[in-house]
Every structure is written in structure tokens, then in C-alpha cells.
Image (spheres, rainbow, N blue to C red):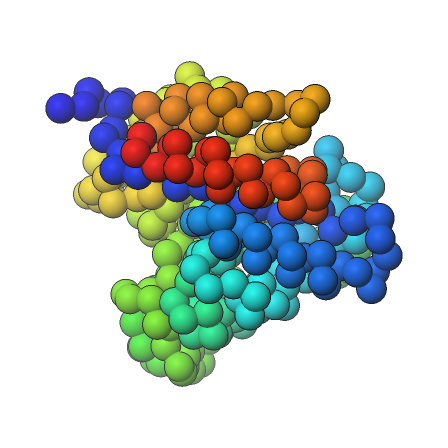
Length: 304
């Protein structure tokens, strides 16, 4: 048996997040380079592919005016160039789209990808971007209220219930959603963030997956998982039903990290109950790092 904080994980899955589109080859080459990246990831058994749902590049990744593609258009493009990988945003800020539109977009992605969509969502944080493009950016309290209502609307629309929804922030007179997603009972809901009082409580109540930040370190991640488990007990949810994912950056290169370094990271994550490690790489566009993941890392971590 596994102890309380060492959940037995059947298989460690590896995902790819793509947060960069500045390939230094010009805007006209973004499309073919992105196709090359995602096709290589798909062929090399990456379980999932994610894009940020941002309109400006985010701080600590690059200048705000770096190239950034709209997420759901991009995911549709990626769906057409892949066959196996799950697809989602890491993650959509709740202020960016009206809930009915968002759920329709995810449902469409799921249908056209033959059942490969996630709904990745969070309470939003990038205030400059919101003000820059005219999105509402209310208080933290209100954004979490909007998040909870959006999740209620998602469950309603995905249960094929077109009766009216009236909440504090959103009113939908006829939340009709046809066609319904292929994924049953619905595309998995992934909530990003590590806030203990609100975010992880909402994960326990509504989500199929959580996403935590790798840079926080193993001890912090163990603590966050324990908090999530306590929230699950409070709301009567089976903690083991929730997919535990992380997001982090790696540099697989001659002068950076080795494949064994990344395998060790995955082993440490698996030991605390993480089952889906999502990585971004500044050099993914070089393609070789993706191939090395497929040859050296993904097979090595599959049995963790």
C-alpha cells in the first residue's frame, strides 16, 4: 500500500505547453513551425498539448509585445495537425469570454478533435492585458464568483439542460449546447492555481484536474495536495478522482538539463501523487528536444 501522501500512480503522463511563438523567422513562418512542433510532440507520445490563454505575452516569459496567438483558434489548428494528444488552455482567465461562448468553444474543440479537449480555467490575473484590450477586471472576490458560476454553467450546458441560468454575474436565458461534446460525461475541467482557501476548494467541488506550479518545490506541492484532500473530505468528493498535474519549465539541451535530470523530476513528482507533468521549453521549436523526450524520457517515466 502507499502511504497517505504517496499515492500509487499507474502511469506518469507528460504534456507540452507552448507559451512562445517568437521563432525569429517572421510571422509567416509561425504556422508551419507550430505544425512541426505539435506533430512531433504527438508522434513522440506527449499525452497533452497546451497553449496559454493570453493576448499579450506574460511577464517573466517575454515582453508584452512578443507574438501571442488567440488560444482557441490555435487549439483548433493544433487539433487538425495531431491525432492523439489531449488539448487545452493552460489556463483560460474567466474574464476573457462569456461562459456560454467559452463552453461552446470547448465543446466544438472536443467534437472536432474527436474527444480530446480539456477545459482549462482560472480566476485570471493579468490586469495589464485585461485593461489593454478592454476585458472586465473586477476584484479578486468577484472573479472567483465568476469562476464558480462559469463552472456551474459548464456542468449545466454539458448535461444538455437548456433551462435558464440566473446567477449574480451571468444570466443565460437558453444555454443550448448542440452538438454535445464527444467526451463523456464532458471534457475534463482543469483548474489552475494553488490558492488554499478558494482555488483548491473550487477544484474539490467542481474540477476533474488541478494544476500546480512545479517551481514551488516538492514540499509545497505535498502541502497543497494535502489541502486539496481536506477540501475533498469537506465537500464529500473522492480525492483520487482528481487528476493531479504540474506545470514547469525545462531546458533539455547540451548546456542545460539532461534527460536523466528530467526523469528524476518526474519521479519526485510521481512519489507525491502527481500523475501528469506538463513542461514548456524555450527550445521546443528546435524539434530535437521533443524527439529526445519521446526517446529518452516518456518511456522512462511511464511506469512510475
